[in-house]
Image (cartoon, rainbow, N blue to C red; front, side, top):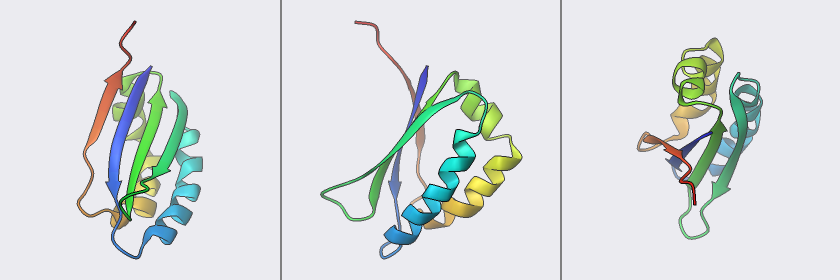
Length: 97
């Protein structure tokens, strides 16, 4: 399992519109091959700051499958105009304990 972690900074005053658009976009990502789950968290201390966590079966499920899909174009259209600055996406794998 791969965990995609993204810190999102939404433009001031656009938080409600972003959350509404994200609900629509959630259906897109949830329909993708290799998708396991996702969560969106709103920061308590900083307005407009969100943490997106997405679990994928493999790194390629995200980087090739999702990003290379027509569905990703719709995801971008729904969400990318909300971000300032544009977020950095990072991927993590669990450390066995």
